[in-house]
Length: 130
Image (cartoon, rainbow, N blue to C red; front, side):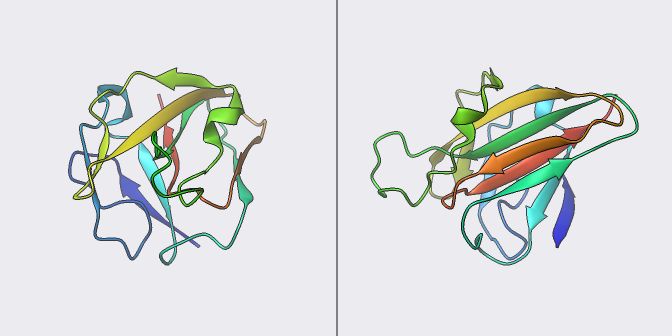
């Protein structure tokens, strides 16, 4: 199951049982609805299916381990979506101070959008309605 949260500075992230929090949230992401997975991790690779009856913007964000300090632990594969990346140079997961990357795509009313992810995803999707 997924827990809905409003994206804001200091929001707990990225799972329902998490105590970590967001810093430097990009302006366009503020106020969107984040869907936090239940528990503390994913059980392998998978996908989200997002659908709406109105036009919307879908965001996908996750920890990005630039230096691969943690091996594949944070390899969520979202960069492979070919979505537009959101400029977010200060977006971090605190207190670890790990970089978060964010991408966006437009959602057409009535057309489901599949969002595949890798086993190392430490993040989720958010939906911004007009």
